[in-house]
Image (cartoon, rainbow, N blue to C red; front, side):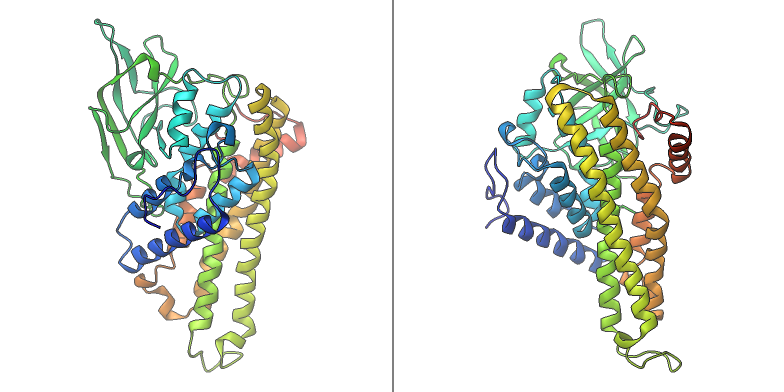
Length: 406
């Protein structure tokens, strides 16, 4: 099967064997790039994702998608995170847009963008900015301006543009002439759109999370994509976006487990003072691997549990619009996952070096990538704030903050 051979028709999902093969090819390419120094972006992975219409995985079948349930979708995200966490992260905003497109009532021109998704197209996001505006608010330095001759143009600079350089279209957030937040979906290669891959984070290095400059980019009226102004009223809570990060983390922990097992099995010797001469029989090493295994299992389990809560909320939103209580429950569940897994995950990612000896710290082994990638994902929304909010919910029945971080 060639790369560009259609593997699923609109309105259907690929055969499970095809998905397994796809994940295997993505994983093999990720491993090859690591072995070559880890400097190459996941270009092949992005091509495979588009060819297999992975971006349509959570889209209903009657809209041309795979029709995965929310639980099935998050199983796929965890598998992608295990195979290549950069690639999984690249798709995060795209999948958020796909869910918005399916919510009732439908957004203006939703059918147009649904068709793009069903055909395998990817929609990236350019929202965040490096500015003095509060994080999580809806105040932007980027402007959508109506010129004297009636044209709409975008003017601004975005950062943390995860996935933008790999996408076919971009969802852009800006401030309108009236001061209200406004959105649009535009072609990623439109004149005036300039991507710079200047992301220099310690982890998730090939997600394209750099700068996007919008230099008087023309926007047509039929490309406007309204932004809601109040969470739970006219825009969704952020449970999907947040749980998505935790699902990638769960996938990384699975990869960490695989590497820990391979590390112990591959050792030919141990220390003279070790409990056993053979590393695979050493109870101390086995204990560490067992702890890593348990953390990986637990992370996947709590992600699936929260995905069930989220699935109920999303189905309600698709059928008849927001259900405030269901949205709140799903967001609480997603926040619990983050608080529950962050510390054990980072500890597990550090402990892999306890089973590998001095050779495990070679840069070419790249085992530190697990900790770096996890730390980068977890830094999207600091746990100290999440834990405090969960405590307020538990003790005082407080509502969650009006923010896309919940």
